[in-house]
Image 1: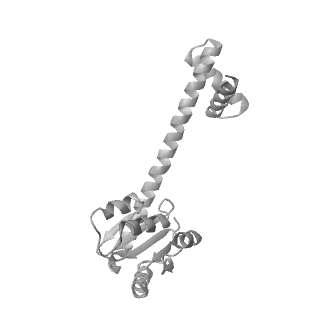
Image 2 (image 1 turned 60 degrees about the horizontal axis):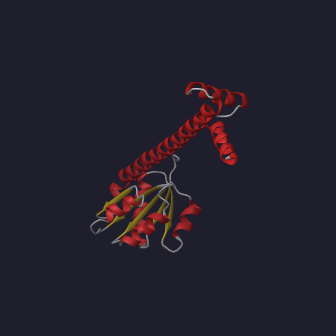
Image 3 (image 1 turned 120 degrees about the vertical axis):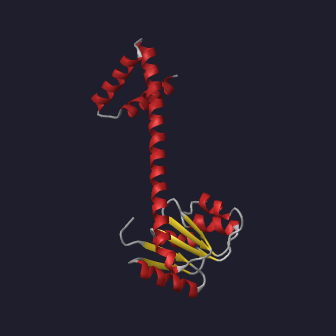
Length: 194
């Protein structure tokens, strides 16, 4: 995220929005946008493309909570939600919807900066975990493809596993491609021929 953070504040009450904006200005040099209506929220947030969405609501329902979280696109940015009251299970719902930080007992200006920092840190941590998980899944799928291609080479050429791997690796090097790409092409071609 950029050094000069862009923050969207979702607050329908003008007076509360001004308190939040003042607290943010005291806390740091932020680019601040206030959205006073939830109508078209997802579109507005997407257009502004902020680093953080800060939502302040008094007493959310489960549906409102999920709607706000999803509109904020928590996979793309940190989302900090401040509520005055919270029914049982709503904090779990918020976290499951991707909210980075869910604070009950309202927004207190003096606590805003550390809470935003925590939301950003948590978002970054989950972003790294999602990236690592995707890379691990991709590596596993590629490993399965390579093993399948090795089996095909072993059967077609009557060689052992090490020789089949060497044949695939040489083909990849000769063609300037990744081993996984050669394996995928072989598996696809074999599927077309059978």
